[in-house]
Image (tube, rainbow, N blue to C red):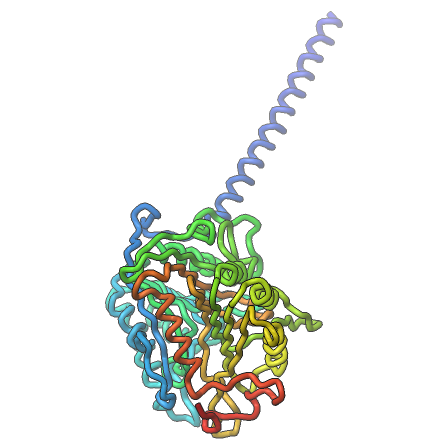
Length: 467
């Protein structure tokens, strides 16, 4: 009897132990399943709806328009371009479902001493059009780095959905990205933000591409990334597949731009904002420079290969790319056009002259640098007048949102578009942007880099220049 009782107790004990193990295993399985579900649900949050547009169904036959704002007091003609104002209004007139905007600035209205400036008229008209989108059943979504903007508050009251990105927490930089998406079919990328000066007193340059949902689909993935970062102070360790780049330097989009065959892709900055397969701006610039054979023309508000944090450092990436190209490529012509102002760093001249020195006694290369001379303000300050940010070579163009400054490239958010075309074709973007650069380069608003003088930005104005 005792043996039977002992055996029964052992069986009961074994059964209890087995049940305990099952409970533990079940709990672990449930925890793992919950963890996996949380991970994937979190990842899904970082994507966005794409309105059913796919790589297979999107449009690759596109129309391209180069847009500029040339201030009235500059005697520079439009060169196969249209006014920025006209280009943006056309986009808004085409909108049937959605308008999505990323802009570093929101100052379409302007007041000075309590009265509206006449130059702000175009900005006020554009703001009114944006506010009226709701009456046409067109949704407006805006991403901004600004958290205290009366204009964004106005747009919100008019039905816009506004998200704010805390770049200081995410990358210690600024949100300098500037682009539009309309109906997921049309796009604008350029130097002009939503600022009345961009439509009146500043020289701006950009590109609008119509009916190009394949390229817009890729750019929209960057918008989705920004959209999901609202109020966040961290970036995900795993990006959603819906943010993966569709095209890059190794897999370029094949398309037609205004009847000319082309290849294109979208790039982005900073590095930490680049999910899988997304080209970094610095890598896109490097590829365009490396593929150039005869010339490289660069227009940028500033050129400064430096980082300014707790300690100033030399940022060599772009500077080294240009040096390597000048040394290794025979008969290469490089031109750099910088915009000047009181805020221009004096070291800019030193870096440019250092590049130029590589070709002083060489027949293999040529480097020229000029400054787009500023206008003098009523208070005596010198203000930049050109914000163009692009590079054109014999085979490609790169147009972006960032100055060629180490600090911006490393930490600030921006996007760029690279377009590659064969020179044998007519009406290419490459030829048209080359013509725009050469027009500015030869205008009487530029001054050649002089190694024996203080930087022109602090000593000359437009009225001092001559051909």
